[in-house]
Amino acid sequence: MNWDDTRIFLALTRTPSLRAAARSLGIDQATVGRRLAALETQLGAKLFLRASQGYLLTAAGEAALDAAQRMEHAAMELRSRIEGHDETPGGLVRVTSTDSIATEFLLPAIERLQQRWPQIRVDLEVSTQMLSLGRRQSDIAFRNQRPDSPELVVRRVVAWPVGLFASAAYVQRFGTPVPDDGLRGHHLVAYAPHLAQKSFATLLDVPARQARIALAANSSLLVRKAVAAGIGIGEMPVPLGEREGLLRLWPQQRRSKDYEVWQVLHPDLQRTARVRVTAEFLGAALAASSA
Image 1 (cartoon, rainbow, N blue to C red):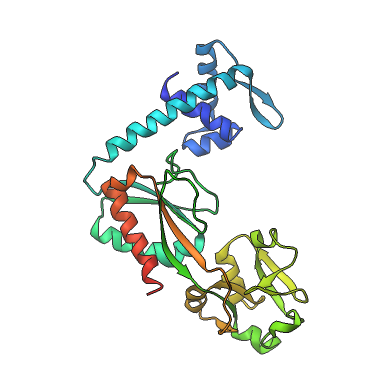
Image 2: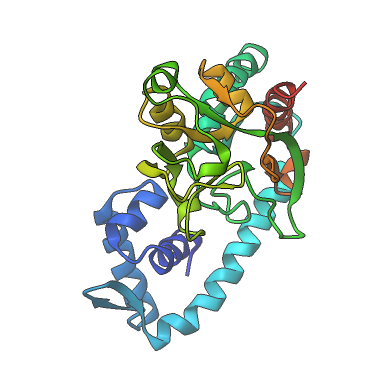
């Protein structure tokens, strides 16, 4: 097995369709199918069963998986060691973040980075998924939860207080909610993943049993824009609500858990010049927001 064929094999084990595997590798679907067929011919064994739910590993495929993962680890280690000696701030840096953080803080920082180091190209992916730094899906990640992997370099860059916000038009129409009546008569804009973890909505740890959920979104940026549109009231980090020009409700009340942002790097890549300077620019932009 050569490394190019191994990458295709591994991609199909993680995204079991030709189209999804091709997209993750940045190649076309026909190439994935052709290389897989050539690999199976070379090995003299079927690695996958073509089922309705996608590509499923055969017994031979299961046997090949462990060796393929070891090959991937060796290739990533070699690449990281070589890049660790690079002192030229140029080349590609992959960054992943939430949409709100990317829009409000990372884009302006990337513009300043380009002025200083125009040879650096940033690929910015907005996602709430935990992309793998070990497999080089991302070089720098900004996450709302601290990863528990001891192999990663983790730094908390900011901890924002969370506030309750509404638009001026909403307050004019519905008034200011009262904490002790379950927010009766009010409309909420909720972050959908949080709803799945609770039996009822809360705002700044206050139960909102009597409120109506008008909109649930899986994007923090959409939550903020929906509140700005007057759809309902919602929680968000205080600096983001203020940037949106929203009215802060209950300013003396604070959620017990702040909104934390963690910068995550692979330990080998933190010595790479382009990754190091990019991490410094982006981390500083977020840290300055709470100064």
